[in-house]
Image 1: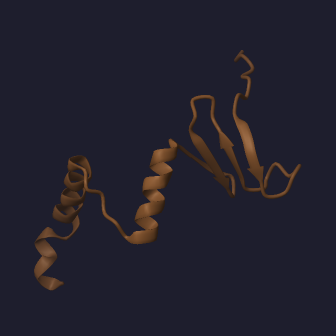
Image 2: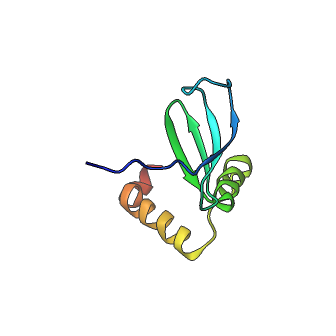
Length: 86
């Protein structure tokens, strides 16, 4: 048998109080921000949420070496050979 787990998340907002299916935001024990929309939850550190919001708001692209390498790999995989068609 599995042991019962204690929920250590702290809810900070719920769309409709008392409705456990409503969208909500919570903070995890480790400080991550969890956003539940439609039953799908994403948990990320606050800096990651900010980075994602900045990309969505400004169209800014990742500028880290790791981010650029990822974009380059996507380009090569999906567009590289077909670039002349663009």
